[in-house]
Image 1 (cartoon, rainbow, N blue to C red):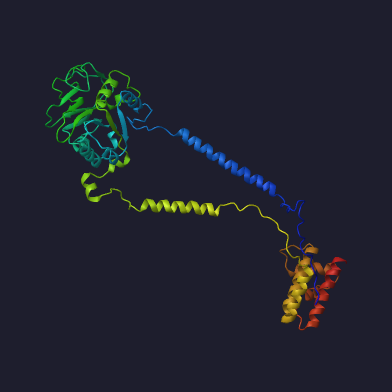
Image 2 (cartoon, rainbow, N blue to C red; image 1 turned 120 degrees about the vertical axis):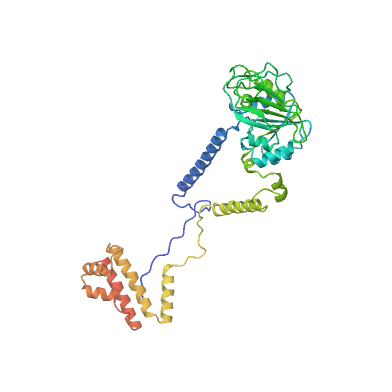
Length: 423
């Protein structure tokens, strides 16, 4: 049995110093990967910088950290300069944990998110405080706070305090920015009303002597249901944009700076649906999620990050290593031939010989890869001058019945390739 042999792949020659040569184009790939990595890092840093620059201070009305027109950072700084210790809380739970006492003023500057449950809990917590100041509360919130006062809309004209018994206002104080007027509707002994709103039927520049149309400031003495309470409708006058106008700063400092400690309560979105005192006592934690939810999510997130790092780790470039033993191609071919002879598998041996010869002939004769056996047969027939039937019988004929026929087939294949190579 004879067959054509092929050369073994050349062993890579090491460079000087014993190092194996790098694969072609590896340097270019390394440069591209490095450039891509640096680009991603730079873009990430730019995004972080833009996010940091675009991050805005709180923009809700009368937020003590808000530096915008509606914020109250200026008022908070003035109070601190007056020696008032300000503690900002942003949830009803944080307010309940603030340990209120008689030296503490509780201020609700933006009650828009103050839901019924949070208002009821605020009323319970504020009983321990020395003063409660509420700006812009509506009638439902006031009822939940246990205050016999109703709220109505207003604004558009300047109001003069016109009262002598107030702890917040002076008789000549003027407020030009206000949005709510209040009426005392129930029993409120010692209630004091300032900045009385003129009646629509009376002179527009003269307060109603009976305060029948309401006022922008109501002060209530402490009772078993609430501490000393200040209800004001000119909360917007204490914002950064207008705090220095008229008597706005004076009324704010007197209302909020009477006690050495001020708990500034800014209700958050969660307070709009916060449960009431009874719901908290009966249900415990008002959260709708089980207590194990947060640790479970944290564990899943950590696992996802570790998986991403494991799957995306850099393994480094491929390194070529010299083979410990070089086996010549002829030895492999001869060994395979001996295996076929020992197994007596003449048909497979013939098929291997014919397939190799057909591939080499197709490559030699420039026959396309998609061409069938007929194209190889006709191309070989034209190159050698042999009849197509004879060439087809050699390349694609039946399996040889014995060893002699297999040897004869190998000789025919070798002769056919020689004729094509040297016509």
